[in-house]
Length: 278
Image 1 (cartoon, helix red, strand yellow):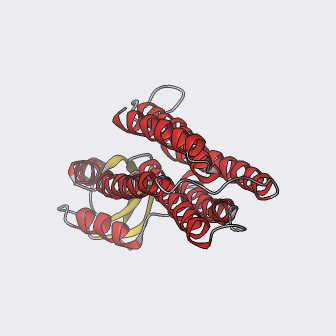
Image 2 (cartoon, rainbow, N blue to C red):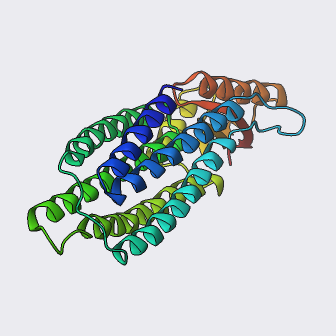
């Protein structure tokens, strides 16, 4: 909720700066901060749902809610890029005064704060393996880019003087293209998790290392790992001595599952299939 409060404060500052400083770029930036509030709430809701334990209707848990929240954020980013672009074109076609010089101070503060928030969220997303947090970090970075473009546009309008009043509007139009491109990257990342894209080879290697360390495991056949929210689901085929009894094979399968669940690999469930050594 701290992120929501920060974005609400930024939206108010940027909107006031845009109105009194005569710059549409800041007003558009304020609208995007309002979108940040919505996206933060979506990410929070995604976490709340994804953290629920498995139930009768969702035997594999609710992990998909987390990348779906990230996908929803990407959709809103696309919508905002379109709105900013449309309004920027309108402002370019409408004569108006040059922006006030002090709006540069507002933008400089906004850029610094947004970059700081983006780095914090990216680090948190990497730490817990969250797609939604990674998407949100990218969103804040795109906000910083928007503000930086506005900063450049306003600087040009102020330095170049009469005839360059729309420079900040052109900057806003350029920024909306960057925002849309960032939205494509966000959507791609979320869709990869929704579509059960295989986990990185490095993670699969770690899973195999843990499983091979269990006594009685003679080798591994298949090993499939996919993300489910903040954790991973594993389907693994373990090779054991063909002379073992069914009970002994069953005990090894349980040992493999327990070892993976106890590992630091953020595993929520494991399906183990026993293969006799040929």
